[in-house]
Length: 259
Ligand code: NI
Figure 1: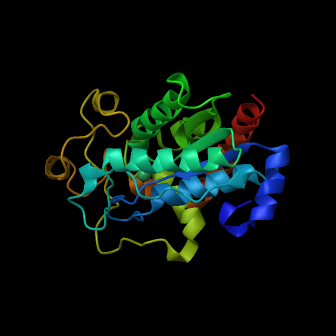
Figure 2: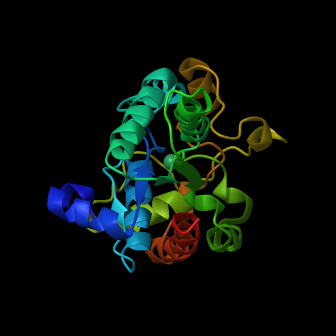
C-alpha cells in the first residue's frame, strides 16, 4: 500500500495493527550507456511494493536522490551530499516516529546509500541514548536487494563474474522488466561488447560505492559500466529476480516488524 495513495485516517487505522513501514531508497545516476538513470530507484520501489503486497504494508515515497558524486561526470546524474541525504533520512524517521511508527525498513537499491543510511540511523538512535527522547527507541533495518540469498544465487547463476559492480545485468534486467518498451535501447552506443575486467580485489576495496572523484571515476570507467556486462540483461531474468527479491524481502520484513 503506497503511503502517497493513502488517506490520513487510513494510515491512522494501519498504525493500530502495524507500526512498520518500508522506505525504498534509490539514486538518480548514470547506469551505463543502455541503462536508465533511475534504475536504483525503480528497482528498490518495485521490490518494496511487491514485498508489501500480501500483508498490505505501507510503502513510503522512494528516496530517489542520494549520494552519487562519483558519477557526476556523466550527464544526468544528480547527487546529494552525504550530509544532505542523512538530514533527509533523519527528518523522514523523526516525522514518522512522531505519529507512532516504530519499525523502519530501508529497501536499498544503491551501494552508496548503505553508509549514509546507517550513519543517519545512528544519529536517530542517539536521541534516545543521550536522553533527549524518552520511551523505547524505534528500530531501523537496511537491506540491499542484491544481498538477499535467493537473488544472490540467481545473479551468480545468470551472470557469474560479469555481474560486476555497476550497471549490473541484474539491475538492468529488473528495470527492463518494469519499463517494457520504455526501456532505453542504447542503440547509439555499442554496448554488446563486454566491459573491461575489474582489477583483482577492486570490488572488495570499493564496496558500498566507495569511489573517488567523478573525473577519475570516468577516466577509469569511460562508458559508466563498472565491470558489468549490461548487455546480458533480459526482461525475463528481471521478472524472476524481482520475484526472488520480493519473496526474501517479505520474510525479512515480517521478522523485523514482529521484533
Ligand atoms: Ni544501480
